[in-house]
Length: 241
Image (cartoon, rainbow, N blue to C red; front, side, top):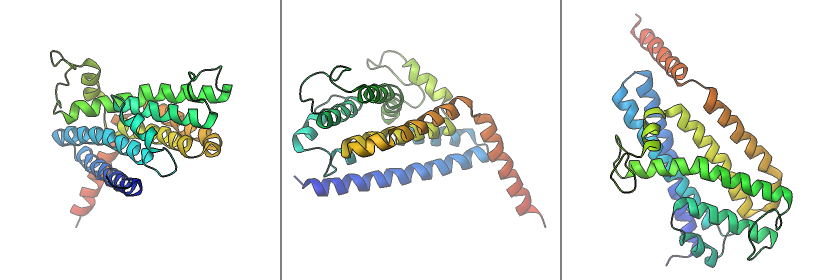
């Protein structure tokens, strides 16, 4: 088995590569939207959604093997969880237990301070909502279910993911990436430094709130029209004598 330091380097390199791939796919999607090519828009949007889930998984691996985050026993505990979402929850739980010296008792309003428990619940809720959606959609796409995502029994359509494939677009997915980035940054702070977590949590949460607001209010139709208008102006300029 490779040393933890080397494994951390591997996971860091993987995250860097997946992040770069997300940027390249986003650029290809914008080009497809600007030139109004629906099959390419659909393909690149699904690729972006799939890579977003992979990016979250790389974030977990990098944090787990950070030399100042978790010991070998904790890493094994996290790896033993059955789902990717459960692993994130365990990462958060272990960090709270470490910082607040709660080895066995349930994390609750009785064992944590009010502010700590409030933040614990906020993080858990966001993981169950924002991250769970991205992970589940990624899993369907990674199994080739690009048109009809299926339930776990493969005997019917998975309606939530089916609706997502019909409604998600580059703009909404990019806002969800902002939400996840702020959330996972807060979790990384928690794992690595409680003072940093306490100092920066409200800033991370404000980023999440701003992105959630943009997700509700920003129009993909307007975004597409702006890209297409810019594309047409560029074509006209290049064609001018």
